[in-house]
Amino acid sequence: YAGTSGDVLASTDAGVLSWTTVSGGVSWQAVEAGATMTAVAGNGYFIDTTSNACTVTLPSGTLSDEVSLVDYAGTFDSYALTVTPYSGEKIQGGSADATLTSGVERSAFTLAYSGASQGWLLKDK
Image (cartoon, rainbow, N blue to C red; front, side, top):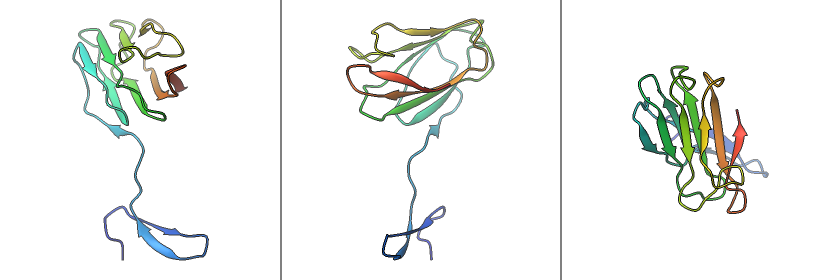
């Protein structure tokens, strides 16, 4: 029987079956409505900019880390979302902040850390 709720049955290349817990994926957090926040690798955030702009600081990156951000209320055109790299790191190869403003209502995207040269890259949008 499975040891933990949510376990899956896995097999080796020799056909030996065992129960295992699957890990990974995005851990979604409660809606964030503050003016600033620091993201944690592996987490997804619903960002609500209904009342104010929000600046998200990315964590110190380790190869394959990911952070997902979603325009919760469709208001990035009213109050912008700014994404700031961790000290000395990059976003899309540059050291500048990335700011999402008009024309990006209901945006959703994931940034993946690729290493020091290019930093956080857009995985999907």
